[in-house]
Image (cartoon, rainbow, N blue to C red; front, side, top):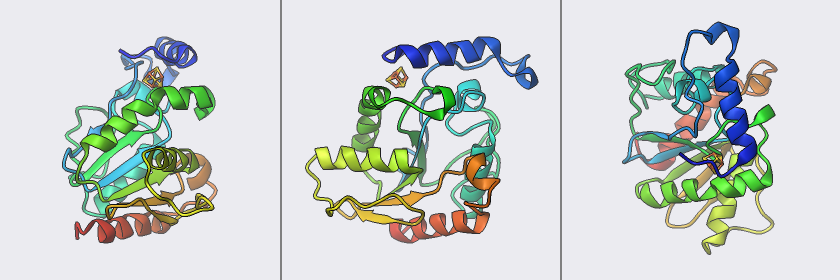
Length: 216
Ligand code: SF4
C-alpha cells in the first residue's frame, strides 16, 4: 500500500475513520484507489483524484458519488458499459473498451493535490499508459488530468504542438502513433449543477471518442 504522500495518507485515513453520517455503517476503503475497466481498452479516461466519500469509500474509481453517476450514465448511453450506474465496487458494472484511472490515486483535501503529490503519483499513470497498449483516445476529465497526460507524453519525447494546447471541452491534441488526447469538463457538481457541463455536451465527448477509437 503506497504511503508516499503523507498529507494524502493522513486525509484518506481520517475520512475513512470519521465517515460521512450517511455512510456511517460502511467500511471505507481509505487507501489508494485502483483503476478499473477493460484491459484491452481503446479509450482511457483520466480523472483528477478519488473523492473523499466516493471512491475513497467504495474502493473503485468514480464509484459512489455524483461525478461517477454522471460518468457511468454517459458511458452506458454511449454503449460502453453494461449498466448505467456505479454505486459500489461489486455492483457488476463492466466497461467495454474503456479503462478509468486518475492522475492522483488518493483523495486530496478540497480535491486539490499539490504539485509534489502529482509528481509522486505520476509513475502509476505512466505504468498504465505503457501497459494499455490498445489505447487510441485519452479523455482527460478536467485541466489537471489534461496537463498531466501532456507532461508525461512530452517527457517521453512525443512531439506536441507549441504553444501547448490549452485545456478546453472538446479540445483534441495528437499524441503520436495515432493516439489523441481529448479534454472534457469534469463531471463535478460544480460543473454539472451550474450547467457548465450538460449531458448533451458530455455525450458529444463519448461519441467523438468512439469515432476516434473506431469502436463504433
Ligand atoms: S497519491 Fe499516489 S503516490 Fe501519493 S500516496 Fe496515494 S498512491 Fe501513493
